[in-house]
Image (tube, rainbow, N blue to C red; front, side, top):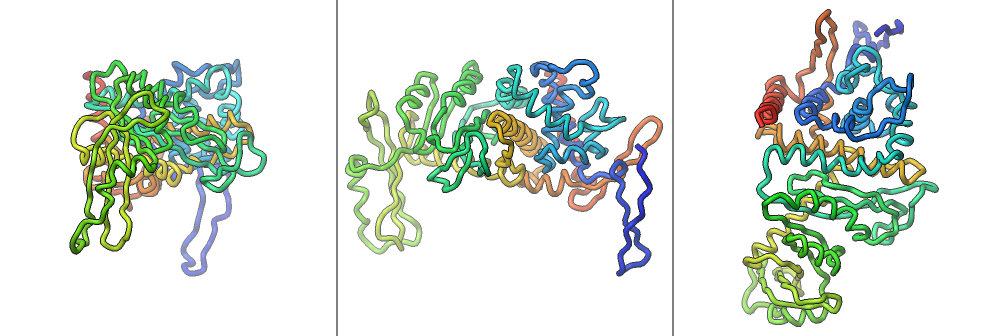
Amino acid sequence: MGEAKKRAFRVKFDSKLKLEFHRAKVTSDAGLLAYRELDDVFGLTDIAADHLIDPRMGKNKQHTMGALLRQAVLGRLAGYEDTNDADRLRFDPAMRHVVGGRAREKLGASTSEMSRFETSILTRFGNLDTLMDMAGWWVDQVRDSLGMSEVILDMDSSESPTHGNQDGSAFNGYFGCNCYHPLFLFNQYGDVERSLLREGNVHSAHDWLKVLQPVVARYQPLDVDKYFRGDAAFAIPALLAFLEAEDFFYAIRIPANDILQELVHHLLIRPVGRPSYEPTVLYHSFQYQAKSWDSPRRVVAKVEWHWDELLPRFNFLVTNMPGWSRNIVRFYNGRGTAEQWIKEGKYALNWTRLSCHDFADNQVRLQLFALAYNLGNFLRTLALPRKVAHWSLTTLREKLIKIGAKIVRHAGYVVFQMAEVAVPRKLFGAILERIARLRLVMDTG
């Protein structure tokens, strides 16, 4: 890759220093190579070649659909969430090698190519439906290969602020802004099973069936216990009936009302004696039938008394799970991780950046962000050594992905001379070793 000779920058504090930029000879994203290796183990982006329809003809076909998908997904994983970044990324040696194909020796896709891919190709020809299914296919490819002893699904919504006259933008009173109102479904590992972009003023549970039903159908043949958790927005009769018909256990919070409080009245009387600094936690289980339910269901109540509060805190869960009330509440409390995963997507990938005008274009962007999130989460949950297993996606981007490297080309191979600062050689090698073990599992079945 030839580069025009440009005058080096100089700094006053050290006259011997010269600062040069070499866009094709150095990279700041060498850590992407580890993610591409994991992608190759499971053949994730190659699924695009089998399922996405390519309408391009002749000379317009410079990069395969799989290569374009890799650039869109891995670019977002590295923090380049806008197609405008492609005109610089296409020269980056790390990006060219993870994209593969023609990009290795030539260049990656340009901004215009990536824009056509995301706004013209993926929004049409049935590709959008395929893209929405792809997050689930990736989860199946990874988790089914390694085995699952149970399935836990967490559903939650979030907001994506909008600006100007974007299609589907509306004011949401709960979030207090003009926004979209996407819906997410996660599994117990933090993978996005499915996501859906919705107009900003819809209810939190709107279109829940479009998100939940395809995922439930995928897991139905799996002979393991299956669970669902959701907040009070999802305590609707149709959803409860659907889960019961599909043999899913569930624990869903329901809003308090006068009848429910009367049924736990004996727990709402402050305990006698000097209160301890530790909260006093009480549980109760009973049968209850709301007016909109066709039959009684089990409700579990949790009441907390705190020494410095006059009134108790209380919550109610509707559930079809057997067992002690304390254990059911503890199981439901695990739902809080779904909120953490949504925050990870916001902060690490900026997946709320849906800046296109057309609603379908933003739907595509959300799905691409979900795929990038899943690839990052697969590496976090499957390939990190124990001492860094707590790293968030944000930390992984800042320390693992953002490794600087100088590229040295030889006749038969290319060397990435990587900086050894936040991630030393030993740690990077341990990550690659774990990925190699996953490849062995896949190869041996």
